[in-house]
Image (tube, one colour):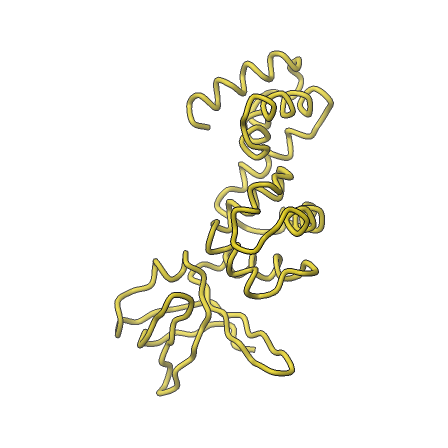
Length: 200
């Protein structure tokens, strides 16, 4: 398997980059997040890669960050999520955002990605909720906080109340998860609202 490529960036378009390594150009399909962070043409570039082998094609996918590659592999392990859908999700969100949405059960947020309907978004959350902890993202503390929001009935009720007030599931879970879980539901809501007012 080709685990990574390092070489001269010779071409890009809206969904791929061609990297020349020892005279061979490797076409890598990339997310928009990776595409926007590529160097100038003819400069050296390094990409982590994933080789997808099917009966009719061998496609190489390139990622600027290791956590993006890990998120891609996790997403494409879900039934109904192919490589194109994985790229669409990671073009719309960062790996950390996806991890946060899945950990908090916020399937609605995932539907913002092109081609991801409510049923598929629910399946992604359901199948990956117990696996996202293995992803090493820059927001490990936030993921732990989201986990705290499901510790007891008080925290769950506080999250539900905040969602009713118009906050997203992930915003509510993150804010409640940063509070002391032994507080009453009312106190949790007050503290979480203060946290949300400060912009988490």
